[in-house]
Image 1 (cartoon, rainbow, N blue to C red):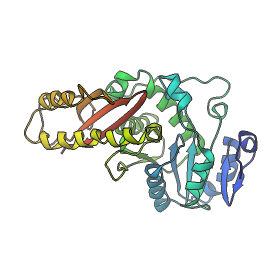
Image 2 (image 1 turned 180 degrees about the vertical axis):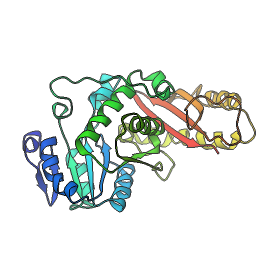
Image 3 (image 1 turned 30 degrees about the horizontal axis):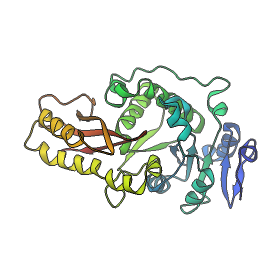
Image 4 (image 1 turned 30 degrees about the vertical axis):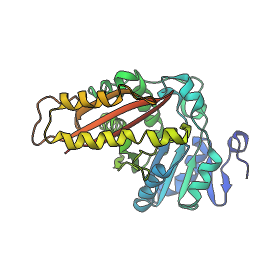
Length: 300
């Protein structure tokens, strides 16, 4: 069955019992009876190009809720690089096929165009996330979390979920969204889910499909480095570990390290003096050509 923008513009498309909506009006008309009956509504926001990591989030949502909304929307306001936005995979038909393997009756898909989210002008709000937005990703992608906050706020307003599910691969984003809920007082529970990995340890990402087979094998170095950092964390200080990580990537022919940081899980600030009762996490970002990959690991 061919799915295109015109077929989704006004109505729900019945994809073998799976309902797909392109407008918030149609989505909310369908969801109204669920809200009236006080059924539990789960929400998994995605940018499409679904992989097993997304599916694991949706499986968690299906266990906890009577109905699950999955949004498929490539959000333009969170991209700093226009080329990255242009090349981001858009695979709606394949995504729907994958969702059908989980449930055709409990999943509702919201696949809008930017106009349905933003109106006539695509723009982002400015947020103060108590400094969370200035660490790591925020340093290298200025304005990125304003875009994330803007779209998540709009999606929460549209979907009005009881529970929303996010992966820990984007741990800083997860922290930002929890802060967003705290600031806006949205009545939604944020559920963080473990990182889904390939058998070789590579964190699952929609960007992985842009890597060659050789590159996909080579980038397993990212997770190996994180695991080694965790081992070193017990006996070495953060500065020495960071220096060691930088050396691992200095002459790498494929991977270019953007940053490696050991941070307080709560504030995301770089670790200073280690505190016994504080949780720490290592974060990494690296490039293969123009493809940007991120990962992280709990250290204690």
